[in-house]
Image 1 (cartoon, rainbow, N blue to C red):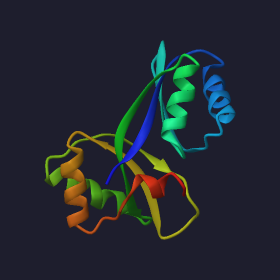
Image 2: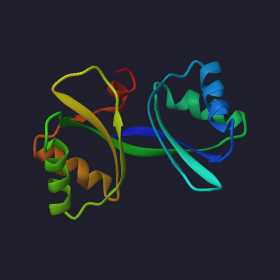
Image 3: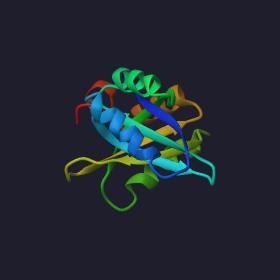
Image 4: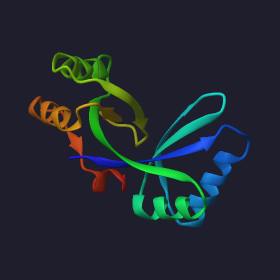
Length: 143
């Protein structure tokens, strides 16, 4: 079970994020989660949106460089050590977390983390076997 993330490559200058949000807003696309990494010259904006196809089409039409990437959304116990336990399972299996970020939802017993793994299928299998709930993309986009 995987979800699709949209990655947008941006020049690191004032107004570029505004251009992205204007494009997505105009296309009727809702941003559900995001992460921004930057250097002095460019950045990578990673998004979970409610409609990846519509977002990708609108962004490309407006000149953005866009890539879809498979990611995993996992429920993490919202308590001290919740994330630590999941990372321990992955490390024991030799799976590297390339990056991760939080998905905001209503407060509850669990948090949702978005993960990008070097061995995505193996990570999903191990987490599922160990009882970690993986959220399907279709469900994630509507949360």
